[in-house]
Length: 411
Ligand SMILES: [Zn+2]
Image 1 (tube, rainbow, N blue to C red):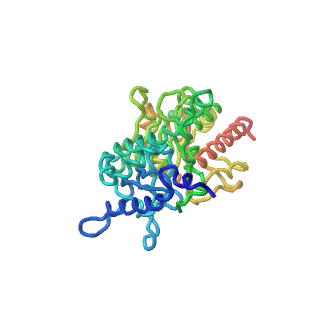
Image 2 (image 1 turned 90 degrees about the vertical axis):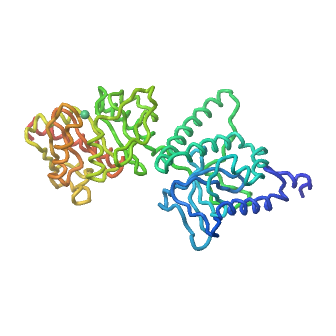
Image 3 (image 1 turned 45 degrees about the horizontal axis):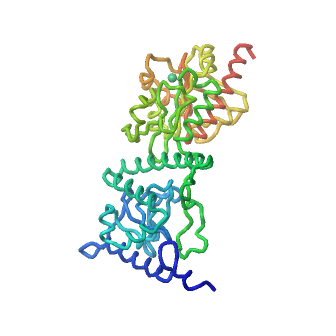
């Protein structure tokens, strides 16, 4: 048996009053959403909220679709829930009961409406982090919904990277940072019913992927001399590598982000003096005309050699196993090894953007192709996602080497 004194004390207050405290908080949050006509506030994607999750303080967040179910609300007829990403919390997200959510107001407003939050925060170990989250939320609340969602992902991506740096520094003798509630931590022993928090796999985030892929392509000699480029679509946002830079040294915050209409959403800091890839019009053409998920542009010697050996406006390759790695966009399936692969060649131009018209013509004329070669220049290759685009790039490069060999040796 624990002593009565121990039972009285808990992280945020007295155990004996904890349940009561939570219930009162639910009622207070719900009351904020009740409008004067008796109806409840309706939430939508991009709305800012206050959300209460188990033992954590009431936290600011944003309603964003769950990437696994593609829904932002569920259980509408039973216990309605919304899918929330938390501010300043490394992409942590959760399904929260509607009764534990209220529409977002500023810090002053929520503390005035529910004064007991002041007490809760003042005792919380997460006090600093909470104040930073509220600051972030207040900035986001001033934006329109599209800007808000983009900025949220950008802020939290950069923050989660700097947290990794802090952890590395702390192991060198600095004071360890306050432990963040783990994204996968199960709330063993806690009395709330929330599902375990889930982490987004940030390794697959374009801000991590693009620098990594550029390093790989550079090592293969495909993007040397600042040539080439890459673009990946992610949650309807287009991430684009900068132009004219050392491709093997690109950093996550060097990337440009635009929407499908070509409007800038996030650009790198001005002091970086970066410009968006010259290939952007062709990238966008592949996204809109072919519904690509990723597009890669390489300045590879094999492509240039192959075009020198093929004065016609197409290359034909047959009889090789690796043809099976190429996707036939017209048939919606990968090629068989006994099929003929035909890849269009377009003529080079002074500026990359001037290739758009002939690129579009090639797409129309060759509905099966997933690549276009540019004579004396390089290749554009795309796929439904970055993996398919990368795999096909590797297969094309392999096939081109063999095709050059066969042409030179007449075999
Ligand atoms: Zn180029």
